[in-house]
Amino acid sequence: MKCVRCFHKETSVYGVIEGDHVVLLKGLPFDKIVWTDEIVPLGQAKLLAPCVPTKAVCIGLNYRDHAEECNIPLPTSPVVFIKASGCVVGPNESVMYPSLSKRVDYEAELAIVIGKKARHVPLPEVSSYIFGFTCANDVTARDLQPENGQWTIAKSFDTFLPLGPIITNEIDPLDCAIFTRLNGQVKQSSTTANLIFKPEFLVSYLSQVMTLYPGDVIITGTPAGIGPMEPGDIVEITISGIGTLSNPILGE
Image (cartoon, rainbow, N blue to C red; front, side, top):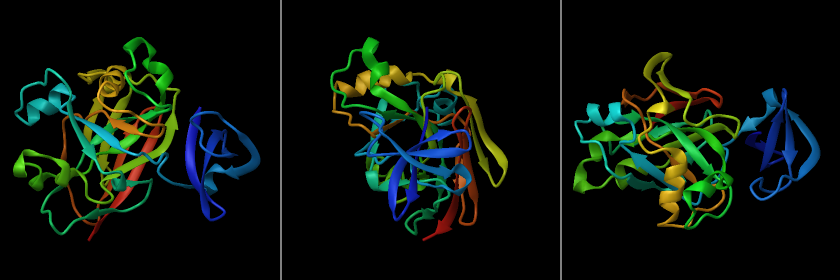
């Protein structure tokens, strides 16, 4: 299934892609799919962020090559931080370059979308709690990240978490090519096979600490090749089987 969230008749609705159309749903898709008779051509659908998370839980240093480029030892347990839910924007929405920062970076990431309330989930049962996967850009004010030994400020500016364009459960999350293109030039190129801590482990691990709710996202880390963006740039995150998440960068 390929699920989207789109703007329709002055409100946001979920839908499922069928061929070149979107079949609209009634309510949220997480508990039960309730179909409507309304169909929108996919090319005419204004796609929004594919979910509205109560929280975005992020994993740092989860690719060996990225840890190496940062000159940081490989983690023995997941490095976890939170991005504010207000960071979320959808496909083609602008990422605002804040005046407080002199360097803002892209980070291509695979995002896990939670499908049902998860707490203390054993690893063998995790798959039933995952609704699907989408693309994420963990935008980061890199020059602010070292301050005070914490990452929240650097990671949580409004618009710093583009998500989309779809949520799908039709991929193998450990066998996806992942790319970043900046103004058409490839900057990151890797595969999710290189993840240190795998998606199902992360869901189980985090559920021992906090309750994960339907629509919450876990951002699983970025590969090597992180780098800066500037106002006027176009950044594209592509994950095979999901699609391309494109966002322009605007000065604040």
